Structures are given as structure tokens and as C-alpha cells.
Image (cartoon, rainbow, N blue to C red; front, side, top):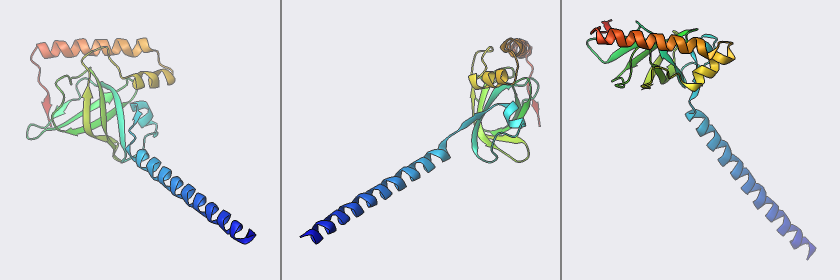
Length: 175
């Protein structure tokens, strides 16, 4: 009688251990899948410092630098620079830009950082407010020792110049 009781306990122990192993595998696979889909945000300062991973989906943001938007007249290819007024990030994008996209405006781009030092964007998100700076970029500037007033004044001045050039009928240059 004691032998069968010991066998039943061993069998229950094996079942419990098996369930724990299966649960651990399921949790591990779930975390691995989620890790592949996370888009971390990096500012141009962080990218220039080498903190961003190459050829992995990331988000980068800042202001579209004045005078850097170059459109290819034969395709939907666009190249521009995103700046946080400390460092610049070159961005290549192929597609239709948002209506609110313009120089001096806040923008967040989603794409992969290439080894050549540019970001190949899959998506461009623009905001309408000339005073807007993505919160992540503003925080990165503060962490780097810059005052919010400094880059806010630069953003306002850039937006005013962009509006003035748009009202004068200025167009973007070609490749």
C-alpha cells in the first residue's frame, strides 16, 4: 500500500513539473515575441552617441531641419534631416508625407537605422503646432543639459521662417 501511494505522489510531481515547464516556455516565447515588436524612442543626440541599434525598428523624433527637405521629382522619395538643435539625423522616406509635414515642425519617424548613418523610415508622423516638440526629444535635451527655453525659441523661429517662405511660394528643391 505504501508503494502505490509513493507512485501516485511521484506521478503528481511529474505532472506539476511538466506544467511548470510548459508555462515557462509559453511565457518565454511571449516575451521574445513582444521584444521584437517594441519600438524604442531615440533622439538625434542618442543616435549620434551610438545608443540606437542598427537595422532594428526604432522611433526617432525632433524638428524637421530648415532647408533640408529634398524631394525626388520622379518618385515619392524624400530626404530630410530631423534635429533636436544639438545633433541632426538624416532620414530617407519613400511615400506620401502627412499634410502637416513641413520644415520647422515636430516630427516622429519610425524606421531602421542603417550602418551608413541614416534612418530608413517606414512611417512619418507630423504635428500641426509649431511649438510642438515630441516629449521624448524634449526630455533627452534636458538630460543632455539644455534648457527647454533654448530649443523652444529655435522651434518658434524656424516655424515663422517656414511660414514666411511658404507664403512666398517657395518650393522644395529636387535631388
